[in-house]
Amino acid sequence: MPHTESFFSPQLTFTSNTDLTTNINSTIEAYLFNSNTISNEQITSFSEHYLHPHEYQVFAKRKQQQAQKEYLATRIIIKAYASQCLGYNFTELYVLFDTEKKDLNIYHNEDIIPLKCCISHSHGQVLIALAPTTQPIKLGVDLEWISTKRSLERIANHYYHSEELAACTAQSLMLKAQAFYRIWTLKEALSKAIKQPIAALLRDNVFNHCEQLHVRSGCYEEFDLSIISDLEFTDNTYIKILTGVLDQDFRNVK
Image (cartoon, rainbow, N blue to C red; front, side, top):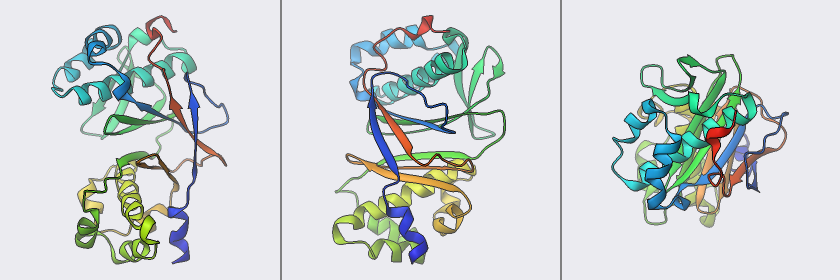
């Protein structure tokens, strides 16, 4: 299965950044942030300072602190990027999910700005992909914590396509669990990119779908990540790990 091997090789480079650095040559910018670094005491102050009233209505429905932290982190980072890189006023931006079109839209006042976005979160880590463009594009990301206790192999035996199972079992014993998760992140990212429910793609051969798109995957610590788009990636696709991005006041950035 030579055409499947590339999906299991590391294709992402991880770099640490203390701020939202950007690369003008990148079609897609991707950021990883550990929202667990937000203290429980900061949840209230961050929600009051950084969330637009429309966002706060959604935030208030999240009762678990981890979900609140993940929501805060994604909205702050997305709006900080739009402010710093595209010149929008942070306080006039808000991010809402369109349940009908399955799009995460960034609004300036009432207008959707030319910035495509997709997010994923797992165990406090948040992954955000951003593509400044006015064109409709396919963009999907997924982030999964590789659990040694969860029997993803049993799920795979029930749902995965036979070629996907064969590709997993062809890996070494140490990499086999990672391979099952890699196919799962590919399926999740694909479902977001083509706006299809994951249930409709579980039994499909994800390799066939992905061969028609551009894919980058990799592992960071205990997490597997996949990014899928119809946009071409640059030669080196970097995931920028943000360390301390929430330490400054973004409300004054325009």
